[in-house]
Amino acid sequence: RFSDLLTVTAATVSGTGFSYTGLTLPLTLAPNQASTFGVKFAPTGTGNSSGQLSLTVSGSASTVDVALSGTGVTPGTLTPSPTSVAFGNVQVGTSANATETLTNTGGSSLTISAAAASGSGFSLSGLTLPLTLNAGQSASFTVHCAPTASGSVSGNLNLTSNRSEER
Image (cartoon, rainbow, N blue to C red; front, side, top):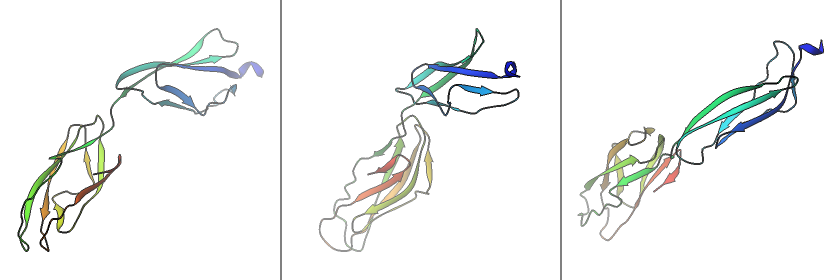
């Protein structure tokens, strides 16, 4: 019977950053039939957001309302301390060490999947990967300088995280 059918004729979303996907209107459902679609939250700033999804049903004076909420946070950001290391004069055949600390200064977690030192004689130790840092969390490790020849050398610490490659 046609009276047993339910038809959703319109959908609206209120609230900053909220939208819906995968819903083709009009949508007609028989009794006990279901349809799945998505609701997306893409915050435009930090802090709490709220909104509402409203579905209009044909032949009905009311709507079906779903409350929406989400919290926007800043992405994870690796901040090194110190930002550079000067080993000074290190004799060939010996080594010098420095402690480096990485802090996630963002608002969400990030995972470091790879780390390598570039430059002749530079290496690192004490960093177990993969390493997940939650917001505000830090990890320290050791940077080694073991020159193989005399002269000035420089290098970089290259880190790969789920945010991108960082130096």
